[in-house]
Length: 478
Image (cartoon, rainbow, N blue to C red; front, side, top):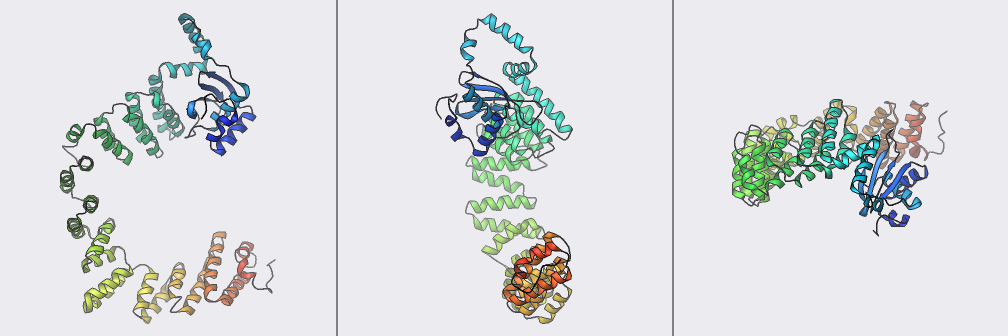
């Protein structure tokens, strides 16, 4: 950008998102800029937004500044409106006038200005920013208790660069109590905290209370600056296992790999612990060791669905019958069924019924029955299947049993249309479009049957329009 403040629209407009620029210009044209003045390279003012209280705006070189509005990015439309007001009216520069004041005169002027409510608040933030920030944190806590506070949190983030370590710690201590997702606000506050000689005990305490990824990463970044002190904090009682995980990750980042692995091995109690250890071993290229721990986890937690990533690893590298059997029990699939059939030989048929009983997906069952040409079982499945399963079943049957697939598509479309909603009509039309791939004439006839069955449902006619339009003799229902 050229020198600041700008003298023309072209000096700042190319650096502002188009929508923000458009809305800022509209605000200026509507006369929402209530006050504008300049202090050296900074443009300041008051802009009336959608809230009852006008927003205070400050813009400096590089379009960096502050606005008390809740918009998360900068510049906002209020800042743009202020810049338009400046380039159109050429706000006077107060800097030379302020510099010309004698010390006593400046003090007297500030005392008079402090009597004006709006200016007094401004001066309080400018002369005692940390105290003003602390008051804002107290207000935020009260807002949280009332189930609100997101706007207050945004405003505090705009003033983070004026807060000290004590004030940022107060904010971080309150944010986990938010009635909304606090993570974006925590991350912003943590970035500021890391600039202020952070205290590791505070970060650890915050993480144990609110174990989010943002707090974890902030602790680790700070810990790299004083690793031995951090490792000392991470010893002792650890009922949650959170400190052990931090300790292991810190050791890895310090390049002390074996110590990190030892820390992970110490805490092998649940599935997540095994997932972390196995994942780390794979990343280090120690696949055989990873497989041993994956097998151990399978033995301990074979029925836990969180085990699937480890079972995928075992199947990919070894694929024993037990690996396939355990994964099939958690996630029935064609791959494991066929693998067991190939690896068990005749013994497979002793397990077949038990395996099929584990399958809850009608489409997968149909695929298995087709594969083995078990027509009786397939017939029973189709006879007992619920209507919501018809589309998936029809797709499975298209190649080998096209007539049955056509029937299922027609029945599914009728069942959908009976629901009587626009979304259901759209679903019926999609099903008949799939039927049209197999039988265009049959799909048109099925569409006509639906219109005749529900003659007053205009929305159904509209959704089926493409299919019906191919029939020149069909007329729109009255």
